[in-house]
Image (cartoon, rainbow, N blue to C red; front, top):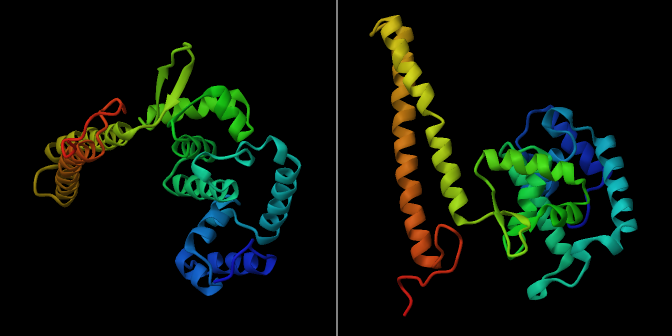
Length: 251
């Protein structure tokens, strides 16, 4: 499997594949590249509808020049904890950011979340995030507000009374519960529509089936989230606040 950066010819093949409505996996197979490479390339250069091979190649060259010029200030260029490879860490952060973007997060929000998930503390201040991502504090503030609204980050004060933004195990649980509860309003409204449209009519049956399906899925999702949290905390020995606790299977 070839390594290194994508060539201009490969980017042209990606553009052709997108125009033919090929899946990322199929495009990657034809290029003999990982699917994640193609996904990241497309998502960071306009998405499936806006991808242009020449513009993507030029943008990559510009990013490479900026990265080279800014290398002394790049946080990942500093010695890394646990002997991590700085370049590998930077590439992984880009991959994780792309995954978050593919799931629906805007780019800056995805970058902030990816940064928080790849520091051992799981928390950073606004100034630390701005420094690591080389963006303005205003961009960080906007991203945190967005992520907090989705229950993907939370705020806390450290011993110096600085506000820190945190990701921990319980946030995934809270986000899943929020997602499940978001269906409740539609379920209730759909069932009201059954009475208005007349039970047994095609339109009413369609709404009733949608309400039943979402009700069933939401109930199962909540049950699975609760069971998953119990298993996770039992095995990792972390509490809902992210603090270390003795696991039940440890002496």
